[in-house]
Length: 151
Image (tube, rainbow, N blue to C red; front, side, top):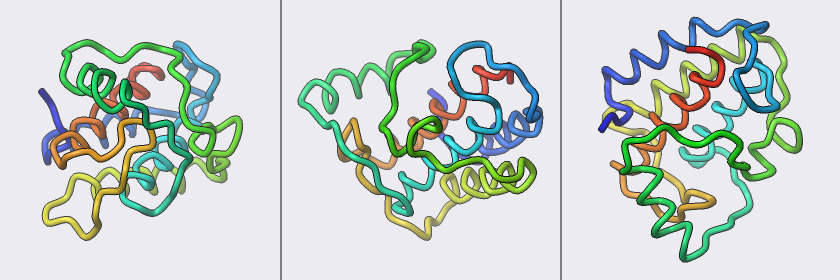
């Protein structure tokens, strides 16, 4: 199972470089630029730089978390995110594509770096995650959205 290690970091940065502002979505409501900002918001949340409202339930922090991080299937389309991470509600608005993609690339590198210069925060749906779970989530979340835009 891939996690956000050095090889996966390199892979995700390469996939990010394939995304253009006019890359059409295969599904969902976000455009490519909004997706870049959404991923950056999510990585910043994981690194404690942003906050989001929580919906941690017994089901979310046990069964859903286990299934999402350990079952080797692609994530389903259309799963809602927290409002603070939703680009059509409260997420960081896109400004300039090159700047925003550079910020995302830096966030991916920092998230996967060793040693870390941050403490992982609490996931707003899954609750407290182990380091392995955060690194697995980081890879899967980025992979999900890069597939959304063909990468």
